[in-house]
Image 1: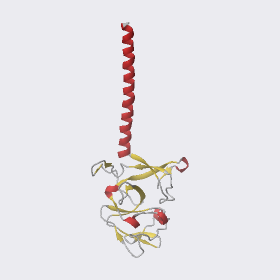
Image 2: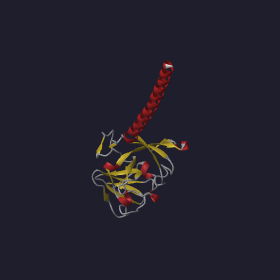
Image 3: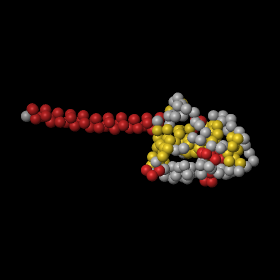
Image 4: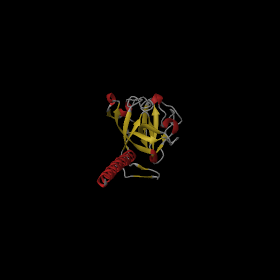
Length: 201
C-alpha cells in the first residue's frame, strides 16, 4: 500500500514538473519575442496607399529597429546606432501630431537642408534630386510646407519625409518635420503576401 502511495506521489510530482516546464517555456518565449520586437525587428501592416507603388495596402513588412539605434522603452534613450539614416531610406516613425500612430514615409532631407518642390521635382539646397528613387515620382505642391514659392529649412535633428504616392500622402508637406527621437526603424522587406515578397528600396 505504501509503495502505491509513493508511486502516485511520484506521478503527481512529474505532472507538476511538466506543467512548470511548459509555463516556463511560454514565459521565456514571450520575453524573447518582446526583446526582438523592441530592439531588433518588428512587423507592421501597411494601412493606406500613401507609399504606392513601393508598398501596397495590406503589405506586411519587417522593420529593422537596431540599425538607427533602438528606442529604450519608458526613457528618452537609444541604443548605439549601427548607421545614420540615409536619404531615400523608407522609415517608420511616430507620427509627430499623434504619438499613438506610426507612419511610414521616405526620408528626403536632413536638419539644416532646404527643401523646395518645383515642377514635380524635389530640390535640396537648390539642387534637384536626380536619384531614380525620387526622379521617377512627380511630387505635388500641396500643404503648408510645400507651396510652389517657398523653400523650407529643416530644423536641426529632424527630417523631411514624403510618401511615394505624392497625390495621396499626408506627409511633411502638410504637418512638418519628424524629430530624430521619433524614428523607429528602417523598412527592409515585404514578407506577406507571398506574391509581394521583396526587399524594400
